[in-house]
Length: 126
Image (cartoon, rainbow, N blue to C red):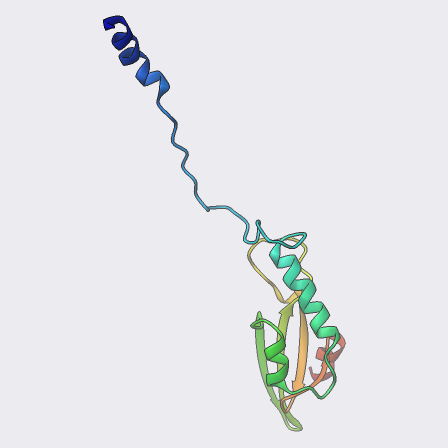
């Protein structure tokens, strides 16, 4: 019996479990998304679909209800009216956590009504 207790005491340090530390540093958001691909890719695809269905003359607030918070917003007053431009992320190539204007589609509103989207619409008011 003494031999069994001695063997158990000597082997206890060898049988101890290991501890695994888990951190969320460096984990890309959306890694466990139910969608194929990551969540930012899915969101941008949904943004493109929503934008493609918008009608000219749509009200600014109605458009904002259909889309996520704009990544950028600009406001310009010209003699003929007030222009709002919102930028929605639609074409990022990789997830670096930063969205730039060239990764967005601009939506152009004049006096709270959608007058166009894309670079050609933006160039018309510049």
